[in-house]
Image (tube, rainbow, N blue to C red):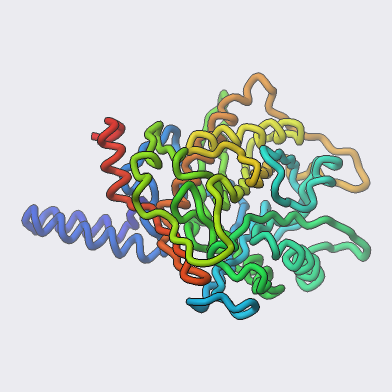
Amino acid sequence: MNPLPAAILNVVYYIDENQTDMNKLLIIALLLFFQISSFGQKPRARDIGIPFDGNTGKFNAITDVKGVKVGYSTIISGQGKNVRGKGPVRTGVTAILPRGRNNNPVFANWYSLNGNGEMTGTTWITESGFLETPIMITNTNSVGVVRDAVLKWFVKTGWYKEDFWYTYPVVAETYDGFLNDIYGFHVKENNAYEALDSAKTGYLKEGNVGGGTGMMCLGFKGGTGTSSRIVKIKDSTYTVGVLVQSNFGGKKNFTIAGVPVGKELKDTLNYEFKAPPSYQPGDGSIIVVVATDAPLLPHQLKRIAARVPIGVGKVGGHGENGSGDIFIAFSTANKSAFNREDNTKVEQISNDQINPLFEATVQAVEEAIINAMVAADTMEGINGNKVYGLPHKLVIEVLKKYNRLK
């Protein structure tokens, strides 16, 4: 839950002195409701009682890593029969800017659990060790238009201060064709611009937003989710933040806090398929972006990205053949590392101290996926195909049944 602003705390103090117990509870509940609404925040996994390990940052989001900004473009229109090129439309674009609007490349690396998907620009990341562009996430058929739009945005905004430059935008995807008119190509240049231009720090919307708008996950509605962890290594404190576009997994494998929630809810709110394209359990994908302010070099960031599948596996992802499970990690430390002309000096955490960052990555990935599902609302898309949002109350009852909650 978001921290209460000072003004609300003052009101809580006043009602504590002047109201009956019942009135206090009612007023506090209303304050909490309006406080959440004021930030555009829906309840998150922790808010409904789901337990997780680890300590989060202030926002419990990738934006807890200083300088990271996230923006969305969400496209929702139409209903009923799919008319190619007209809709219904349930899609969008997500933009992650590692240093905000400062063009200062960061050390990065990537990892693929199963490669039935796409993330452009990764060949040069492997070769150079640097991420030089924002990270964009959209639907499968819109990678090209978003990639081209990023290049045009660089020209439009003067992102590169050099007369001559070249770069390879990083654009990833997951498939939303069960709900979205994906062959109608509704993502345009302006949607990429909107995501980039709206990028901000602080609290982030989750669920049916940005590139995650039309996504499905583990038998329920999926989408965009985020989480963070704070870790201490010797005398230094570091942040690990994660953002996921979650669109993977079969319901039978869905697990929360070690509890087989999917099996318990196997006959509850299943996908409603009316007309093609259909869905096979296990199809879909997940894109995960990991950010940290810990001073890690590219080979260490590869190790961070390679721990993401552990978090995915904890909730039920098995890297199925039909799933594109692709992950990227970057570090905002070493701000002077990128230089075209001069030698630079960089700082590095030793490998023997890196375990807390591995653990933080696993924990934040697990929670970000569940946050995406908790925030996502039921959505009906093309031809009446329907995917239900996670039933919060039933999930809590299942967790109580297995003694994971009191």
